[in-house]
Length: 345
Image (tube, rainbow, N blue to C red; front, side, top):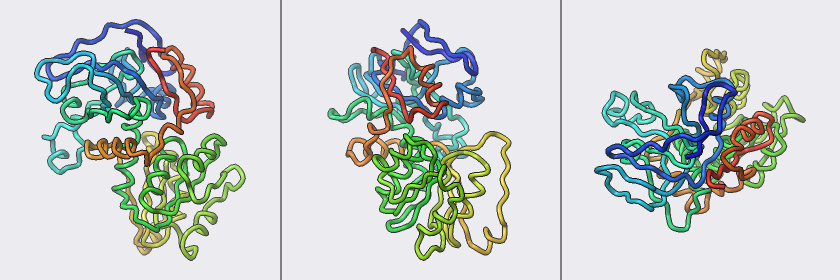
């Protein structure tokens, strides 16, 4: 099959590799649609010790397609089924799984290889985190299930309530989906970003109530506070960039009794500082949520299938498999939100 193979930072190759035959419990999926992801862009730029464990490796992890081959003892699926699969599944047996913290599973192997004509899905993911698509749902939309599942997990864990003021800094695809999710949950939403393409999507896709161009208003804390009830500060402040300085600044936008959600992952070893008096006497809740769980993967599919989450609006362009490196560089230059990769173009 044709595939993108990852050899290291700034080093991916479009080449022919064998299709891995399915072992017991596994299936081979013919990839009909794959999507570029910010995590893939970071991996392309500087590597990823968790996502990429051996070299060369398959690359990409957001996809939907058709089951091409079925291994022994697979239940509930057959050749020809239209499916979407997550990039992981919890073991159900470790310390964290026993505490129902499935996203923290100690045996959470991450699946890569979506930038290819076929991908072999491990047995555990087949059993726990692969879903059959509704007949009227396109592969293009279904491929958004994995990134949206992360957002749905984060939004529900934040416990966003109707009428709350929610502020989001960082409006890449994750920030945009988080903003849209907050709107679906009934919140009033203000967002801040710098990229013109993404600012446009904050209106057309997320339907944010207020959009702040941080190029024009770099001191955005007052604007975010003024958006809140009586100017007290936001009920919920969400950081979707992954920069320590933004973590610190968005902390200053939340009201006493509010919630700060650090959703953007910072570079390993990063440190931040907060005013402990404001944190303690202000009764501020600080939280972070990582990854997704089978529950939220299913909820993501429901949201896409219902039409509530019009994810197709986030697609910047459609590209063939051999243009993945071009797509990575377009992301680095800030010229894209998500590319739809079609391995059979």
